Image 1: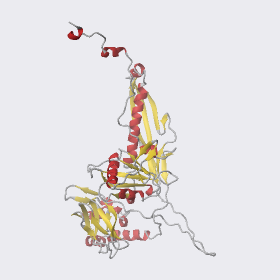
Image 2: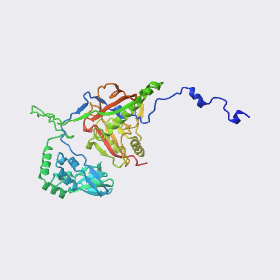
Image 3: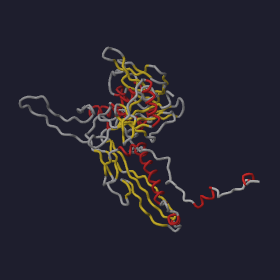
Image 4: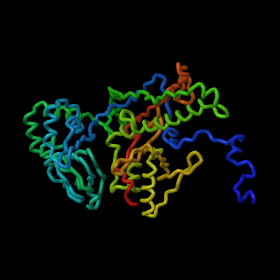
Length: 463
């Protein structure tokens, strides 16, 4: 009987032979590493003192923010009283009891798509706050045809002129683009509160008087200059007023303590240094977290700190070329779009439906999707809501362009990369060596229109 028939092995098995072989191995791999385009494309400003102050010209046009709404049930929708100060006439008003009384008088109303909420030229009979949904703002074109001027969404307030005008009328027509919920305050209720609260009435009058100071189209205090004159007229005297409360940005830390046993360092660091590989992976994770913080941190993150007048909503749900044009034209010198990969795919589907095939641009030797020549960089740190909506960000970059800048320390002790340090903390009684990994960064938009956000981007539509 042959060895093949009995199953007897005639030579050393490959499994056993591997005990004497040297394997070819990789360094530890990490699936969570992304291109981190935001970190790579931000112009970085070194901040030796740890704080970066953004000085601006005095802005007179403040307010026009969004009113906060809380929902406890299908028909239990309420205004957050403190957020009513986002209505320009109420900016700076601090009487919490009066604000709470105003908030209680707002009543919810459900609307259906196509329902006209207000008609141009009609009297303003109520103040409206959009709790949920999208509303189209419609004007009249040059030849009398209706034109959609934009879409407003959650938190937007309409009709606040009822607070300070005797016979206000709607300047535009507002029509529900989707089903939604409004909160309405009838003008008669508002007038009753004004009659009962002289301090509120006086505050509104003071706000209107302060707003009479001349301002440019961006809401900044006007600088008087003369032009087109002849002869020797008296030239205007002027000065450039500054914002008395400039914003300051501190550097935000991302930190972790890496522990490695000395026995592992001594016995198992050939051919790869175990400490080096541990630190490399932790630094990669710290940088991923840092990019997420630059976008989503409520204190300084770009998504939360974009001014409300630089936020627009998609017209119909998925991101269309029209929406991207609206976002692009709100600022000069847009250098990049930043979008979740699923949002980029949704935008490309809309382009394909229109027979448009935008040419990519080359960045760092690789093709990147683009619109109007502006690259659209993928970033999976931009959140996607449970309703399958996300945002697309557009930015102008650099101090010289009054754009968005990244902030990091000038130099750190034990620095291993710009803004990143690894500090050895010593060996404890269990023979564990500890290393402190620190990464410091922040971001700032130097002027409000340096960054804009396209919101309510539906990535599920059109599949």
